[in-house]
Length: 363
Image (cartoon, rainbow, N blue to C red; front, side, top):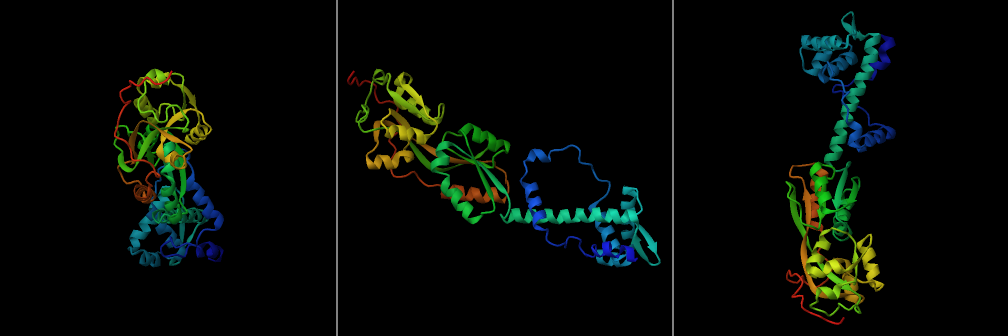
């Protein structure tokens, strides 16, 4: 029995889940596994085991106690039930695991190897329980959030800051794209939730309005359209107009506000709202932008509104209807209560298209 004393000592546990904390390297490996992309876990090669976890647990308790009766007492089973569990495991694996020595039992050479593998299985189960507990307690995990450019730049930051301050161990990843793409990726499960500024496509997603955004036309105070309340389409021909997201909801609104003259504009495409803002401050053309993006510039007089109408639109949070995990549920609660209202600006005017395009003006 002395030859098997050391390995058997490592099996002395009544529940086989009471194992030491993993080393730092092991914990890191466990976290890395959880954070791998789902694609790396997709496999058709996982074998369906011919044995059960209860058979493994019973075998380890017997091996650790070197006595079937003692093991039966610990497991709360009858002695024949314990013997049957071990026999079923031996039959499934095709090897003899234990041999009798008087009233006791001991591991065979094959049993010693199998016991080591079984102990790794039970340790892995404990790791899985620890991971689940960490996820439930928001101590581990990640969130993939989608947002439009407007939502990401002006409405999402506060919610992210509040959530991150309370749950610093949760990794946050924000994908900036258009409303349709955000909704499609949330529906498919590639994103956990999203924040958008355009009308949400018809889907089964839960949609919650968290703020109201106003789209306005702005330019430098010296621009010829500033102070004008009516304009004829031909007066827009060739005017420089800055675009930051072609085909987006903002441009749909701009086309409504400017009517037939929208297609006559000389359009310059820039990469972002901030790029448009800086170009406007430099005296380049005019643009349709969220009022929240230029509130400070309007307040300082560096930019001015063009009074050809405006539009209000909702900033909406979207998610799948079913429960999707504690991290998502917690972030959703933050997102729907901590999105800021737009910065100071005029209340949105009543929805209006281009007002009676009969102004002729100069030129």
